[in-house]
Length: 380
Image (cartoon, rainbow, N blue to C red; front, top):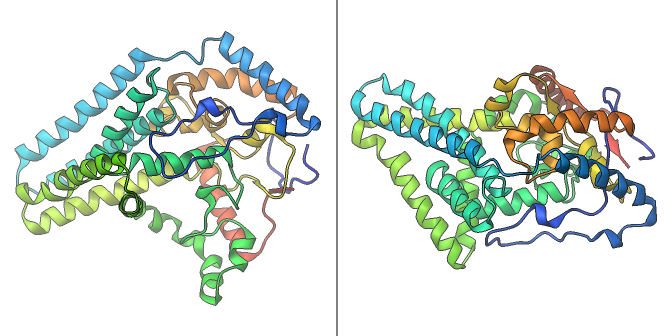
């Protein structure tokens, strides 16, 4: 176990050394993540490998890694059907302020489509990588307006280096900072803003969709491969549909408001679905011998609640199980909790599960603590 874990409100879970590279594959990314074979790790982590091997055996024996074709057929059909119904409603309502209600529904459906794209990126939907890539490209580039290749490269790095401030792209400093070292690297204004950054979390989340749109465009503009041309074409079609078509139905003023509502609520819902996953959990510094199992469990947070919580968060409420078994279909994650949590208790590994509201409170507390120089959870 780590020599120091500066936190007070956690439980306990398991681990493994060496990241299973077959869990994450890239379509045609601009960067590939180096996965370390188990032989490169010192003998001290042998028990970690054995622990994860035992947990993996229990999970596979329970049939939890099997693809759920029917589930995803219904999920994709219902979500795209809802999207079509909203488009039809917008056309029928015409130049009416009632279409702003459609904008809110459209934001919800776009996030649900984003969750499907996330599952496709992890090869949860289909057995063949190519089929998952096709679904990911259609859902991400055409329907939600994000570059699938850019996101997948970034997301794979996140899974490989979870909560490593020097390597995890989700911890890269931007408008917000997540570690004391990032605060120290800021100028005078940046350090001042860090002290009040918790107050700006909610407003910034409304801009998250715009941030992802722009990041996708910048990434694709730097690429020259054939896949980038396909992605760019799909993004262009998306722009015409979601940013151009409203002006064919609504007056210019109402069209601008429609787009603003859709994109701001889209970003807010998407951001609130991801922000509780790791923010406020221990960050890793230096070389740790935790192994894969403990590394993923100690840095992830689950959310409590019934199946409705899983639907709203797209399965990300089972973040621990998702990070341990990235290719596990979303529909099996809650069943996996019944195996993972007792296993962690048995091996005295901290397992964090909180209500969504408690998780949001801890996220805000962490952002405030980082900005004010207070102690934050760190594993050395």
